[in-house]
Length: 213
Image 1 (cartoon, one colour):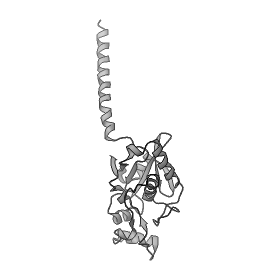
Image 2 (cartoon, one colour):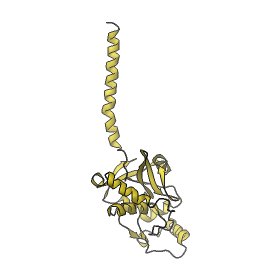
Image 3 (tube, helix red, strand yellow):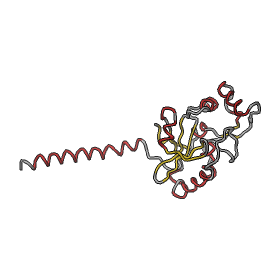
Image 4 (cartoon, one colour):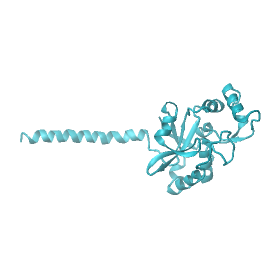
């Protein structure tokens, strides 16, 4: 009996600790839900053009991408040098301070089922491999980050996640923006070019925040 009691006591302690973990873990995971195909990520790029984008759009965020899983692991389809897949941890680490926000389409629970997710993936992958668009033209020959995500959703579901603007509608008067415009366009700035910005998509009422880290 003297040996059984300590053994029983240790077993009860272990069971109590394990029960506590099972109670705590769901709450911890609920604070940061797993990312799904179709979630949209935003961060502050450390690229040379980031400051100009931030000033022109009055937004903290200058780069974005689309979450798509491959072999069960989350990747970000983004327009960088080309439209390509980047592992999620690598994409997050590239952002300023590792900060990012994940947003989800408000109709994702009903429309992004297996069939809807496959449709979105098909439209997004139709742009894979396209070179990055340094001049933000509204064509499929070259693609920039917000254009990639906006067109994928619009073509898959007919939704507009943020409204397009003309280039002239952005704040083009600050020195950093003027310098970048001269570098990209010279003296012939296409002020009537249609543009979709990360800021416009971030502020869309059709998206809700699911993670902010």
